[in-house]
Length: 245
Image (tube, rainbow, N blue to C red; front, side, top):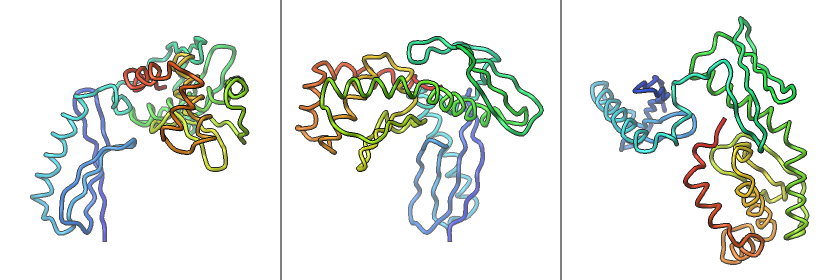
């Protein structure tokens, strides 16, 4: 039977939740995901050896994060200022954060000001997660119709395929996806990219309506619609990790 405990590994300006899982296995495994790091150990491992493996895991995490800091920005312990600006879908918004004695977190967009009201009981790590998700949800609502119109414009000028819905949601694992029910899903982080890059991801997912794979036929469809698509892919690989709320 597996057992699980968690600690917070803090170094430099990072705070990473580290879950220690003892389960039926014969080897040690360390991995990192969206929500934190996971150290998997044999359930019979004695406490002194567990402590040794935790120290090894911390060293591995330090080296891994410092190799590519931008990819682990979600674990940065830096807080948000009370006011800052962000360009979303080509528009500059002012983000205002008000921390109050309350249990819930909420926000709304008035003109080009996004106002967030947060509980003052949140830890720095929790607050960062809440601020990202609130921004994502509010901007998804704000730009949904405009983004959906852009998808339809590109579809009419390229493949002219039928799809069911266009959805925007916070996603770090990919920029977009096309379901077997022909629903087009896009990460709200795409709203932070240049418009030509955004158009490429739209083209990419529309092409999946014809080819639900990444075969040569699929890439031929993408190239027909956007001959310069490889430039956009390079941009995403180089700058994509910096596109976050």
